[in-house]
Amino acid sequence: MTSRPAAGRVRTDACPGALQTHPAADGALARVRVPGGLLTAAQLGALAAAARDLGDGALELTSRGNVQLRGLPPGAEPVLGDRLAAAGLLPSATHERVRNVLASALTGRAGGHADARPWVRALDAALCADPALAALPGRYLATLDDGRGDVTGLGGDVGLLALSPGTVALVLAGVDSGLRAAPGAAVDLALAATRAFLEERAAQGGTAWRLAELDDGPAAVLARLGPAGEGGLPRAGDRPGTSGPVGSVVQDDGRVALVGVVPLGRLSAGQADLLARVTGEVQLTPWRSVVVPDLAEDAVDDVAVALHRTGVVFDADSPWTRVTACAGRPGCAKSLADVRADAARAVAAGELPAGGVRQHWAGCARRCGRPRGEVVDVVATGTGYRTG
Ligand code: SF4
Image (cartoon, rainbow, N blue to C red; front, side, top):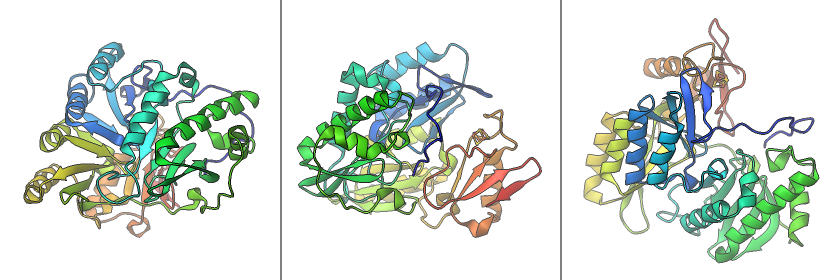
């Protein structure tokens, strides 16, 4: 669970966006929201071209299924914004930072009680259509879980969790609210909860970035929504962390999806172009992997081999499924080490610390990008790494 600060936030959040970039040590950093992690091949191609033409030649996959471009020169924002808008990746300049929506991996293709993709589209459109919702903090997160339980525990402020094909639970900061909706009404319920969050936030001083930071956040928001049932789902925030699915998955329609881990979440423009050539749509996951769906059975091996040659990992036992890292040097001025290079060396040498368990490498104690759940920290000290 997100820990509450002892006092209210004293500043507004400064989460980067595509237009409001962050000045990193290696240039400006832009974060492009990708609701549900869903990208068409054309959008992926546009991101690859932007990374190549404007950035450092790679796309960073984030723990919220978003994409970052690094190394942008001063003043690149308008050009980037125009390119993203032309690709349908910037539907609202005013709401770009609040479109944080995670959806179940493989939703609508394999497993789950529901297809969360229509929820993604409806929620995103409604968020962008309401001027008041531009006031949401850039860290506000919606999780749309089709019932497999993969994203409900990932720290959402508001969440939908399908309990059956006909019933959806509203989850607030990882806590079952007790409120239920039919699938067709679920997005409206999530939107009502989002507006209730903003009202409660204003009533409590207007400084919170997350629902869990409000006093009695879930209960206070629920009180604004009306009477609820008993709830009683397990606390979603207590679910153990996972690395998500890896490898090939037979879809409900008989075709095949490949799920490949992108080591350290760094997808080169060349890899993105290759992905865009082999499928019509990809889904980025919060585990820095990419779903390549809708493959004919006789095409799977060729696609897997081609992507594997570029470094995408399809082996569920690979250490890359257990290793994440912050930006480190040279991208972050605070970093005491080039953590990505050091982590890659440790993987290549078979010398991961802590017996190779799930671990997050960081260049300083802030541990940016740390996944949720049980993770060993490998933190640079200036003279080596502290593991714990
Ligand atoms: S954990 Fe520290 S070194 Fe790494 S990106 Fe965050 S601030 Fe920079």
